[in-house]
View 1 (spheres, one colour):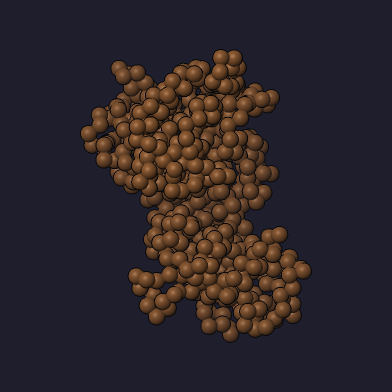
View 2: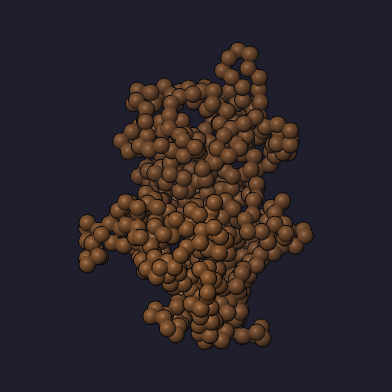
Length: 558
């Protein structure tokens, strides 16, 4: 049976982090058994990983199109994988499935985290092999030594709550309709087989049910996503939203979102977007285009709520609580972050967490594009707030890590209802005597960038690259995705190629508006057929202004 993932997304690292993927151009039993062992040990509770045979690797990334395997190799390799699996101690068996990718045969080995870790594997395939514990380090499998070995031993028989069998439920508590809806949405090949497969078999294939044939039981993650009322198994597993009309605490409205995790998350976000998020347009004196900003950027709210759903404990009967005040949105979940993340680490720009509470919940949310990769959530929230011109968000927990609180402050101009701040910022930039960008906020960034680039490309100002710090605000505000588009379009590219091949996103209007339209408005990107924007021959290229920005990015990054 097929795997419950989209293979193209998997190979391109869109639904699974690169550290959880290993690519092999051909059959190498010694390396593969070490990687089987490392993924099964899952020292960081990331959820195991995937070995993809028939795809060459370069610097941890796939080389496409794949080299592929011969059809007559597939059966022989699958039998050898079973033999290799028996070399692991304790016993372990991965899920193996052949696929055709770009007209080439490949073999995908899904290695979920094992229940009986630590696992050991022979160092070589020779007769004098020693046994070692293997773990993942970046995109490599290495022998666990010293503190890594001790940490692995400490994980013995410890299974994250979301990946445990629920003995109070039956496999029939998993709803086939919800499972099929999920498989269809993520475009898994398993969808076509799911209407014929018995529910216990389908549950085992998706790793949402486990046990001997006569006593198969659902896993907690299966009930959280594929039961219509997961709160009947996990107390208060829902999201509560309270919207305060004033500061008295008496005038408020409440709404509770229940159901499968992804459904309640989407319903909650749609409600917040419709009821809470508002846009304002401000006319700036001496400027043709008005500035647009929102009271609370939706992308920041989306990421903060998704983080809360992802990382809360479903062993505790406490909901995710969202309080919308006149001056902030506050998202509270229980308990706090997993050690070593503490309050001091939460104040840093980037958080390095080595362990995760809900490895399987994260996998499902990422496959549904409802959560970002590891360690990217808080930086993304900060970036979205900054782009909107909002104050810095705050994140906190207590010394015992009993809670996690995210606070998104209101945009400052929203309180006064005036455009005073925008005018002041615009005047500061236009009156500068030097060539630096000056004060920048997310709400005025594109307009200020437009003026700044014009001064140097059409206005004749000299660019002083001996002092790159003067231009560093540009680097901090221009997202890597925008820079990637500019680099890709140094030779003309179609919209489909830009969004799907360069950015690894779907060719949809929302992604065009998000990643390409701002570059067009700033004249960093241009159309090859400008008088017919919807032409089937339309392509996009980086303008001289765009090349100027790329040059600046290169200099300020060095």
